[in-house]
Amino acid sequence: MAGKSVLLAGVVATVIPLVAAGILVTHNAEVRVDGASECAERASDSDVEYAGDSDQRCASSSNVEPSAAPAPKQTPAASHSSPAPTSRPAKPSPTSTTQKPSPAPNASPPPRPGAFPVAYFAPYFTGPATRQFSQQFIGQIGNYVEVTYPAGSSSPSSGVPGGAQARLPDAAGPLTDATLTYSVRFPVGFQWVKGGKLPGLCGGACWTGSQNGPGGWTTRFMWRAGGAGEVLLSDATTTGYGSDLGLGKWYFPADGRWHSIGQHVHLNTPGAADGYIDVTFDGVLVAHLTGITFRTSSATEIDSLMFSTFFGGHDSSWASPVTQHIDFANFRLT
Image (tube, rainbow, N blue to C red; front, side, top):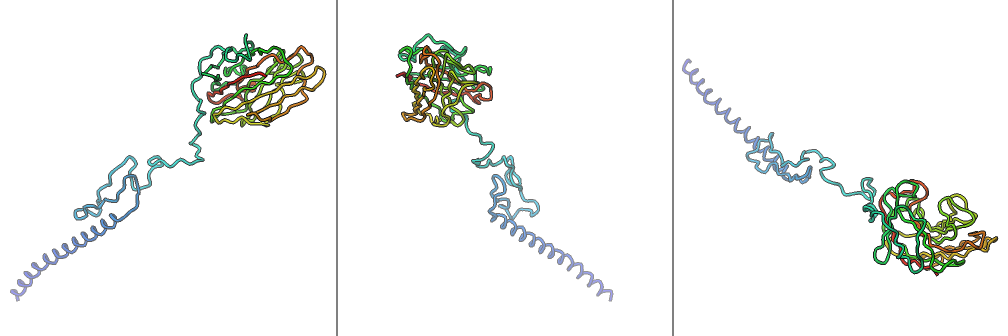
């Protein structure tokens, strides 16, 4: 009996290690199969979760611990979550508030003020020049003149100088009927703001600003918001800052091309309101403005070009937001 017990104990001692080894082998085999299955699944995953993700985290599956996969290559924003908005720039939206239109192509430092180029306006207009701004932002470039309007500039009273002005006598002498024509070019992207002055004819006192009454008149053109054109009249009967005539009858385009503008001024007979202005744009009659009292005396005639151009208006709310320019050429009086 004692011998059988000893024999049974020996068998048990032999079998238990073998069973344990078998269990271990089976467990390890299951681990390897699970690990291989996981790696194969992830290697076939085609989603892209972050910058640089190529789904190769289980490339060496036979030696990979299932709970400790090697980390993917890191980029500054690498993670298994969605990238930060700045890690992959989005395509700009046409309505994005961060995409502002480029400034006007003429947004550059303004030239230093210089002398008004009186000789350019010959033979139709001559010197001496009067009624000049203290600082003139105008210069001749080949066969045209360029006027600059620095950022923040408007009327002379605003405190930020810009534009140019000079009164030039006409070489033909005093007239009662005459036509002024010239060419003007607004750059692409020109910012109109509220409006600004453009050259026109004048006579006698050549009123500007809030000055009006018998003894003088001016017919400067203006551009207004959106490029709408008008004649700003100051004459014997005008009050305030002038009368807006023909507003919106034509538009100045900001297309970088030359356009012709003309005003045919016919002075009234003293004592009658029979004066008129015909406006042409690119050779087409766009406004016939009648019932004008330019003068109360025959001593007031057509005698000068009032080359006057600036943003305004009479205060800074009219100011140019950036430095801009306008080109002028081909001044003629017929």
